[in-house]
Length: 254
Image (cartoon, rainbow, N blue to C red; front, top):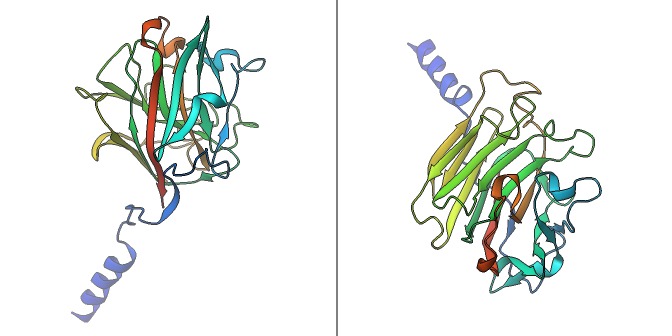
């Protein structure tokens, strides 16, 4: 009897699954400053040339600091057109905030319009020496204006990238209206995606190796609004500009 009690106690204390609630706030930006907090973020600028023209996706925008602003405690990424040139914004936490495992939560309002492609995503911090897709990519949220009411969540790995099989399209009527929370829970075993706390996709390959699971290292955050491109385009409705991708906050828990 005593042995059974001790065995039960051991199982409860030591074999209990780890709590993955991730309640420790590791990173938070509520964009309350007058300008972008450069302790947290850097700007990606230009059109990607000469090394990655069109940012690798035939995108049509030029990224500019002027298209990124903080107003009323919100981050505003604006898409505009001046003459024949499209402008927008992209920020990244590369070399400033990188983390391995945790919960990412972003509250955002999406812009509507054919040709727009807002995204909340992450890349492996070793991308400079371990190039894409080997570095891994976690797409927390992608939206393409030509397909209203659809949110894409995707993983890119050496085993499947570009038109990755590791993806889920969530059809949510009027997702463009108001703010919604896009969340990803990431640990050593799986990556889960949520929209407004509803689980929409779980990625957990049975075999985890460098080809199927490049997600056992630090990653960094990216927020951007692309225009056109192989996914968001190719057509762009020029009558929609200007448009805004609005982020209320970004939080990371461990």
